[in-house]
Length: 158
Image (tube, rainbow, N blue to C red; front, side, top):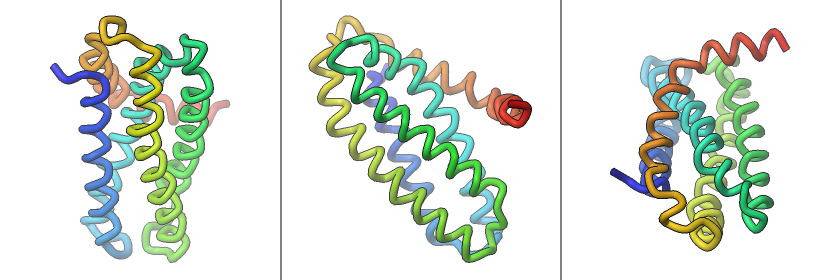
């Protein structure tokens, strides 16, 4: 079973590949739509599972609170971009401009998380304390995948 760090990095590698795949497409092509749908759903379920398993553990530690809050704030900004892009016309120049912003910001977020945040987490959370969190993360991500549309509908009501 992968550690929480390995599970998150595996997702990040998939996300980087999907970002590259989307970047290689044009307009509202079938390839772009398919890659975008995969990216959108995977990132949304990944972020929710990450916050509920990994970041909740990190935020419980005094020294980890700032890093966790910063990352969760970035998740919110990225989620707003995801929703904006999901509703926009993929064939418009504006879509590509906003996608480039998302790509830049998300690549930065993943690099920061894998470097600084993981280093801090390893200092403040013992291996014994976080053992099994890779499995919890993956299980929660699977659950979240099924909740994306329900959460989206609920946010429209707010």
